[in-house]
Structures are given as structure tokens and as C-alpha cells.
Length: 203
Image 1 (cartoon, helix red, strand yellow):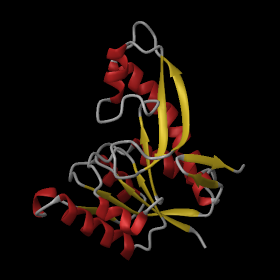
Image 2: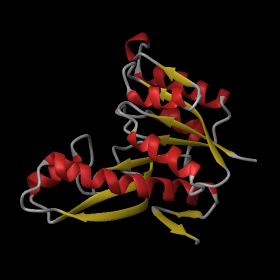
Image 3: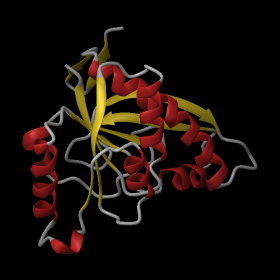
Image 4: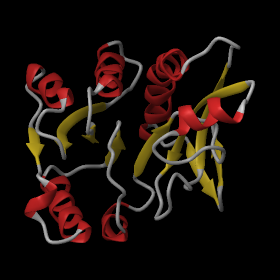
């Protein structure tokens, strides 16, 4: 039986597209994207999903009294879709503990830095401002902290002297589009074992 993946996105959905393309190429096995949820009505990720006839849902944050209430609604939608794995793809909301009651160790995120360095919403700019010579991206399990969950995969890119936030971010984004599908496939195939904070991969 195929694993059911739900994607939460707030922006353009380029990582969503990379996941869909990887599914088409057979790089993610025995899986399908069954739902895309966004907190932004104008998120292009929703349009990408509609073009593939994937169910979508837009939730407006101001319609909910608290972040916890918002997340309870998201969890309800995920459970209705019988979601196995939740994938955050440019989702700009901090997930509350409510989420993990149902999806502990079943939520993945990708971050544009080599965690634990430069967490948060400005990882690329922070890394560039700090003067690092190497940056990259990290796929990690999501926990209650800000980009603090166990690290699944990481890859690095060089930082050039003439880099801007935009050029560095684009180079990292290209790497994300390769690394995220690889991480998802490892999860789907049951090849990840969590030992404390360490993710051990059985290839």
C-alpha cells in the first residue's frame, strides 16, 4: 500500500514540485501526495497541487483563536487524509506541541543552512553575514523547538566571495530539490532508525 504524504507550504512550492517530479521519476517509491495545505491563499504551491489534481486546503490564521487551535484543524485534515508522513516545504508557521501528539517522528522539514548553525527564518542571510565559507541544507525531523529536531541528511555548498543572499539561496535551493526527495524515500522505505538524536540510515 502506498504511503500517503501531505505537504504544508506557504510559498512558491518549489520543493513540492521537486517532490512531485521525484515521484514521477520513481525516486520516491510506493508513495503519493494526497493533500497540500497552506496558510497563505496566494501560495503558488496550491496552484501546483491543483494542476496535479491533488486536494488542497487553505487555512487563514486569523480565523483561529490560537496557534494551537490552528494546528488542531491541520491535524484533523491530515488525519482525514490518512496521512503517513507530513512534509514541510517552505511552511512559515511554527508548529505547536498539539501537532506531535498525532505525528511524532512523522514530520520532516528542510532548512537552508547546516544546522545547528543559523536556525530560524533567515538562515541564508545569517550564514552570509557571519562570513562562513561553506553553507548548505539540512533535512531534519521536526520537534517542538526551532529547527532543533534530529538531523537526517545534510549537504554542503561553497560560499563565494561575491555571493549575495539571492545567489547563495538559489544554489542551496537546487541542492534542496535533490536532498529532500532522497530523505523522503529513506523514510518511506523504513531505512531510518532514531537513536536519541542520531538518525542511523540503513541503506
